[in-house]
Length: 257
Ligand SMILES: NC(=O)c1ccc[n+]([C@@H]2O[C@H](COP(=O)([O-])OP(=O)(O)OC[C@H]3O[C@@H](n4cnc5c(N)ncnc54)[C@H](O)[C@@H]3O)[C@@H](O)[C@H]2O)c1
Image (cartoon, rainbow, N blue to C red; front, side, top):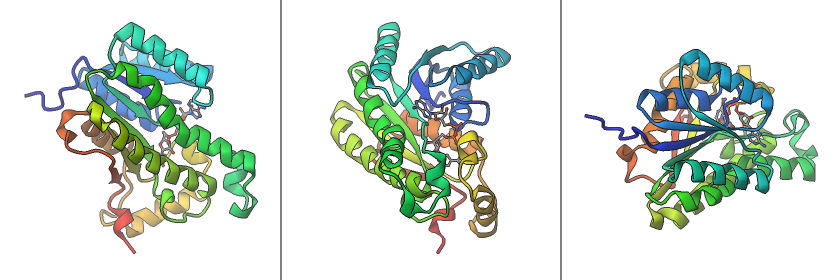
């Protein structure tokens, strides 16, 4: 029995930079269950890597440019997706960015511009993408975003990104409340530490990996694959009763004192 029921569903995956990206792990699972995956990317560099990955794995997908800092780019991308596929059934929002200096400097030094940039890219982008996709989510569906424990706890070197993730989680809940009436669910996956391009920007990343190994109930770090599995569940009707929720894929780390 196909319990995931994602075959031929049109799922937009935002945020593949390379094969280490959390979004790529999710895309691989989506291909495996027969979904129609539509990718958005920001930079040509990412598009090149993505096309090579697709070729190498013999996956067929539509790849569209979308810079989440630009309303025009978001509107163009989702209009193109909507017109090409008619219906959007799901979105994976796996996008975040902050200025390097705002992760390295003292939090006190956070600039107005750096704060706004992190919020715009990492939190507002969820609202903007949901708004642009909404006219095409006519059969209901699911939106899943990626967050991190730094939203609720002070983690060394996460700084302005922690504040952006807190806003992202709140935005996720407000969206869930607003578009639940259209049978669209919105949830967040709070992933443990995964070695990716974005993670390279967090100065204390290696220390975080070791601390999780020592402290988490499962005494190990989690993998891209584990985040992907739960994301696919959250996109599928298996999780049909869940919305506005943050789900931790972190070996249980967040429960520890
Ligand atoms: N790696 C971790 O340990 C970890 C843990 C918890 C949550 N997350 C979150 O997972 C998500 C994916 O990150 P990742 O770790 O896979 O790293 P990644 O660097 O592979 O992915 C981040 C993506 O964001 C995209 N992006 C940045 N600015 C953009 C813009 N203006 N427009 C469009 N796309 C833009 C990048 O192009 C990239 O593809 C992020 O939200 C990140 O905060 C990561």
